[in-house]
Amino acid sequence: MQKSAVYREITTDLLNWYQRHARILPWRTEAQQNKVDPYRVWLSEIMLQQTTTAHAAPYYLKFVERWPTVEALAAAQEADVMAEWAGLGYYSRARNLIKCAKEVVASGGEFPDNEQGLLALPGIGRYTAAAIVAIAFGKRAVVVDANVERVVSRLFAIETPLPASRPIIAEETDKLTPDLAAGDFAQAMMDIGATICVNRQPTCAICPMMPHCEGQKTGNPAAFPIKAPKKIRPTRIGYAFIVTSKDQILLIRRPDKGLLGGMRALPSSEWLDQSKITTTASDAETEQQAIKEAFPSFPAQAQKKLMTLAWEKQGHIEHIFTHFALELRIFSAETTSDMIEGEYWPIDEIDLAGLPTVFKKAVKKYLKQTRKA
Image (cartoon, rainbow, N blue to C red; front, side, top):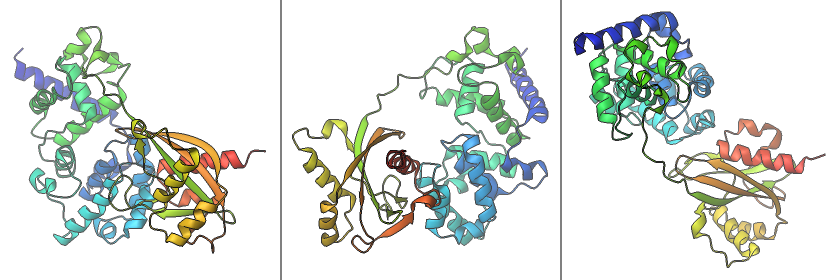
């Protein structure tokens, strides 16, 4: 059989499988009823960046209920969007979401139907642009995400390690992508990667592409994709301060730029690389410096008052970010809101504050420590 015929057979088998076994996902409902909304495709694709389908789905449903159109999202308050996004991580996505919605509305309320136009919008990269073109507009585009990388690497037993193999994977995916039904093909590849051709234990016996899979023929398909050695993730250390007043917690708003920018949060010090932390300073000196860093926008008088509070250690939590691990040491103190002014949030309603996961974990740790029987 000629190579081109093999590609066509793989694609046909995959599309036939997808017709029978496509996952039921909230953003696909409209598509399956021939009501594809580019806004909802775009929203789902942004949420799915670096996020699992199971984790993103409830956020998607909340978003489309509150902001059902791109016009509604463009008119939203940034603080409200950030609060709804809390827990999804990669918060620059939420800020770009608003910027993108505003640009689309300013240009007439319609998303571009081509990759070049989509790439000009905030927060849309090459993969997302291709996915929107294929899924929302039914146009041919080569869509490659992590699932597709894994499937294609195994299908052709690509021995070049990631990320160097990405051009090869893109080329092979291009050969497989049909002129028609490109959106179904892209979603079929994603579904195969999410349900059958999974990371550790692929269930090759039920895969429609198994007869053509070179990785399966090696006897160890899970060895693909081959990856370059992982870099060691450094550890950073920081301090979080829980100031309470009558069952309320003092919260701040983080600076717009930087990690977790614009999010409501606990006051916290800089997060320094473990290797850069001095061992000569006393605990008291370290804590005082951390307090200064945690409350930079507070008036000098308020900072002095904070220094005098009876701070208690409440242990620490660990949190993994993409490029580093964080050990966040937690301190708490009781005060009165007229002594230290700011935004106080009821402890029993803290889940509604829209805190990033790292600070939710810190509050949970504090409550566990202080509410022991």
